[in-house]
Amino acid sequence: MSAPHHRTRIGGPGPVGDLLRVIRDDGHADPTADPKLSKDEVLALYRFMVLERTLDNRMLSLQRQGRIGFYGPSLGQEAAIVGAAFAMEPRDWIFPQYREPGAALVRGMPLKELIAQFFGNALDPIHGRQMPCHYVYRAGNFMSISSVVGSQIPLAVGAAWAATIRKDPVASLVYFGDGGTSTADFHTGMNFAGVFKAPVVFLCNNNQWAISVPVRRQTASETIAQKAVAYGFDGVRVDGMDALAVVAAVREAQRKAHAGGGPTLVEAVTYRLGPHSSSDDPTRYRDDKEVEAWRRHDPIDVLRTHLSAKGLWDAEAEKQLAQQLDDAITEAVHAVEAAPPPSLELLFTDVYAEMPWLRRLRGGRS
Image (cartoon, rainbow, N blue to C red; front, side, top):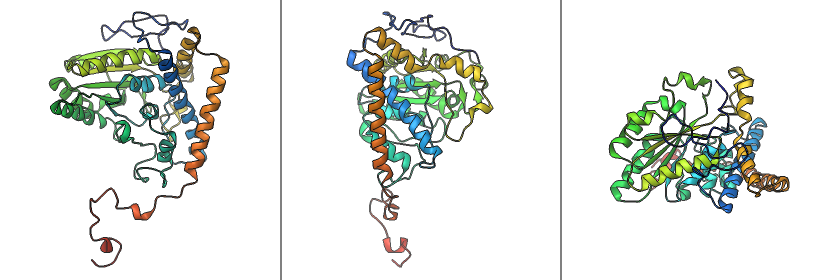
């Protein structure tokens, strides 16, 4: 796998073979593609990305200590994950895969509630019923995660089409990886969305690897974005290490969806800098030189360079943010970890509207 293109090549959103970039090597934004976020917006974008990275590091550490059971990190993909969620409106629905805690945080999910779902104890709103690292936040229109690769795609399309039928002005954002494009659900969702012009933003996080399978073994297409053409709608490729490029592309796609223009496939070209999950050892199948080449384009470093170029960030601000986020995560972990396991009395709640034959279920006679 080759190293990423040099950052001075700034592409426009035009043909699907081009790569949209906004942040140049010197940190300044290309004025023709800049989404023109306010100072508060771009600082919030950066904070969410750093929070996701900090949370990742801490949760992986807790998993290694045996304090949580499983974790799927998003190292290197923060710009694509946070940027896409940031570009949508709060009324829109988000259908994640299993690597989007940053999107849940953008939607307002409390840090303590998110961490409780990693522990799966009594503070977990879903009572430990899901797999670890499979969170949901109904108040933020953030749907539950499914382990089945690609299965969220037709669900997002169905929700968007239902909203169209109800004349409800909302769109769906659905995340998936390059591996997800090899599933039947990808074809089903893309085809239905194209035929019925469902208001969907398909966000493919092309991180180059589906666990140990490289993207070149997923498709013979030159790009993933070009697959949209066969389904009758637009596809765009963006530099997934450039948060502003992701915001620009997804915001345009979201506005088109809301205006009745149908779906868009956004391919965020990024890289999974860490393992697929806490059960994975990427050193067994990846070249260290490839990883280091992509690491030079770390999305947090790229956005930090932009903030510095605009005079919005310095080393002291970075130090303060790191301490604030570390303290917030530590406080949340301590509060959550002190909780007991879910009560057995919750076994049948959220299953029956009315509890039937409770004595019989407990071993007695009805």
